[in-house]
Image (tube, rainbow, N blue to C red; front, side, top):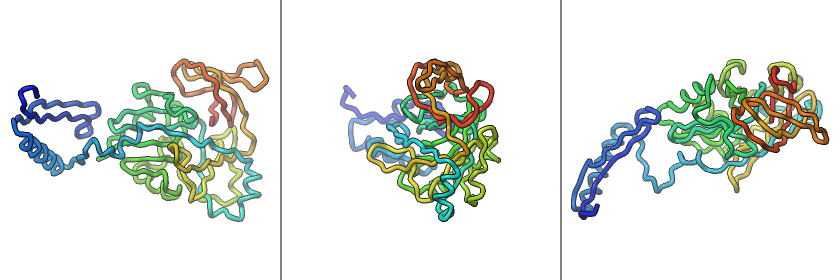
Length: 312
C-alpha cells in the first residue's frame, strides 16, 4: 500500500459450487509488518483447508488450468468392416468397441470456473457452441458433471447432435491427466465421473465393450448405430498437446463414408460441396453461428436436413 502497510484480501468464485458467484473481502487484515501479513495468510489457508477446500498457490500452475491450453486432434481413420475383420479377427481381445450414433465429433471443455464450450476438433480453438448457447440435455449433463464435489475441469471427445452429448474418450477430467493412460485405463477413470448412456439414448459415456468378430458388421447408415469406434486397449487418446504421442481412432462401417467440403454453416445447417462439383448440399450441423469456412468432412448416413448422420 502507499502508506507502507500490508493488506490481506480475499476473492472467491464458484464457492460451494455456486457457479459464477463472486465474493470480495478487501481488507481482512492490515499491518505495517510484512511477516504478520504472511502469518495471517497462513491462518486463512489453514482455516480453508479445515473447511474442506483445496488451496493451491497460483504460481504453481495447477493442473486445473489445462482446459485453457491448446489442443490438437488426431483425425480418425475409416476402415470397411470386412477389411477390419480380415486383418483383426484373430486378435479380437485386443480391442474395445463403442457404438456411435448420429452427430458431429467434437471436443467438449469445462474449465475450472465451470465455463462450458463445444469445440471444433479440426480447429480446437473454434467454438461451435459457446457457454450461453449450450442447452438441452447437453447443458444439464455438463452442469451435473461440473458440480461434482471438488470438480476442476475436463477435456472430452464426444459426438454432439445438437441436444445430446455422447462421450467417447477424454484427455483430462477432474484433476487427472489421462493423456498417457491406455484407453482401457482412461475409460475406467472416465466412468468414475460420467455414467454410461442408456442404450446410447441419453447423454453420457458410450459403453466400451468387447464384441465378437461376427458383430463387427452390425452397423447401419440408416439406423441408430451409424458406425463402430474400435480402439486397442493400450491406445493413447486422439486429443493431445504438441509434443504428446497420440493414436488415431478407427471407425468401422459397412460402406465408405461420403466425403465433402463444408463451405458454410448457418443456424444449425452446413452447406457442403463434393470435389469437382458446383452443386450444393445441406445437412444438419450443430453450429448455431454463421461462418464461412473450408473444411473436409466425412459423412456416414443420409445427407439432408431431416435425417441424422454421423459427421467426422
